[in-house]
Length: 220
Image (cartoon, rainbow, N blue to C red; front, side):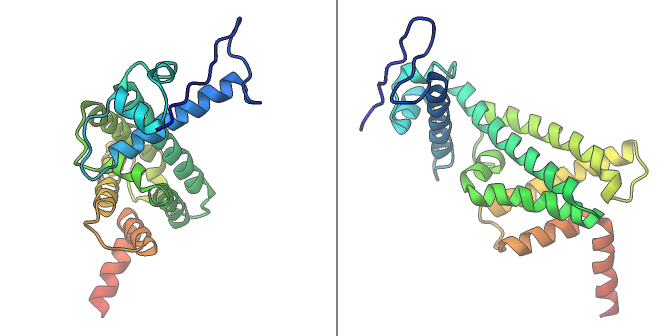
C-alpha cells in the first residue's frame, strides 16, 4: 500500500505542489476520505468506521485525515450530508423543471433514483436499516425533517390537500412511503427496473394516479 505523504508545510499557508494548489490538494484528500467512508459503510457486513481503517482505505496518513475531520463520526456525518445535499439539489431542480403536477413529481423521483442508482453506496448509506451507527440514526432523522419541510412546500401542487395540518400529514406520508420503498429497492427486496420503480413511486405520490388506477380496475 502506498501512503500519500506530500508536504504542505510552507510559511504563510499551503504551497503549490506538483502544479496543484494547497487548497485543491486538501479538497482532493477530503473527497478521497469521504469516498473511502462510503466504501466501508456500504460493505455487505460493515464494521466500525475508524480513522485508521479510513486512512488505510484512502492511502493517506492520519495527518491528512485530521486536516479535514475531527474524528471518524464527523467524517461519516460529512459523507451523509454530501449525499443529502446532492439528492435535495437534483430533486428540487427536477421538480421545478416540471410543467405539471405529474411532471414535477416524475422529475423529482427520477433525480433521486438517478443518484442512488448511479452510486448504490449512497442509497445504502442513507436508507439501509442495517447501518445503525448513532451518527447515521441522527442524520436520518435530520434528513426526514429536511425532506418533510421541502415536501410540505410542494405538496399543495401535487396532492389534493387543503393546507395546514393536512399538508403536513401528506408531506410525512409521502416522505416516509417514498423512503421506505427506495430503501427496500436499495436492499434488493423489490425487484423492479428503473422505469418501473419511478412509475410506482409517482403513482403512489399522486392521488389522481391512484384514483385512476382504481377506476380502471373497476372498469376492467
